[in-house]
Length: 183
Image (cartoon, rainbow, N blue to C red; front, side, top):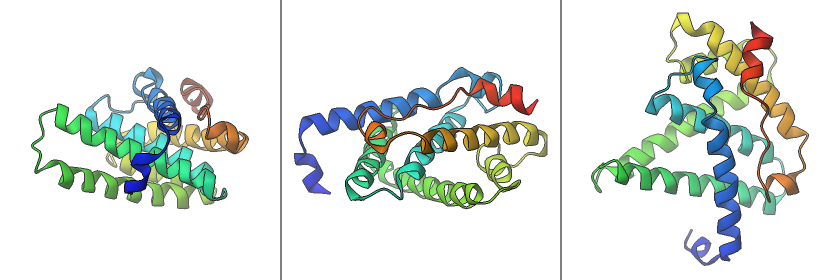
């Protein structure tokens, strides 16, 4: 929305800091070294989407000013992806199509994760296996570990005050603990 361009610089700095916290968690080496997430462009994209989902999932039932911050983080995230694609040399005409596909992928993952978190059972592990690990049967244990991490992260975020989440950002649990607990 064009009005977002005229928001105070302080808000943009806050949104950038929140997004940076999400990115930093998604880049934790334990996801790739211990939990078996593919250390590829796609694997890193999936972990970014997973953490952005967890943050936005926590804020979805909050009142409008809080939801607005979640929307700002979402917008900033896709603006950053647009910039990254252009830096990687993707042609100007292709970028909007790629961003549209990435946004559709995010919404698909968010829908699957949201439904699976609402239920107890293997659904979350299956969604993770399909989205993060490409559905390979050999990755079931890794997917279960990532799903366990997601449940712990959702619980940890639920215990964090919305004012803190929208001012300094989320505090995620350790990624490495999921493997030890599941293994």
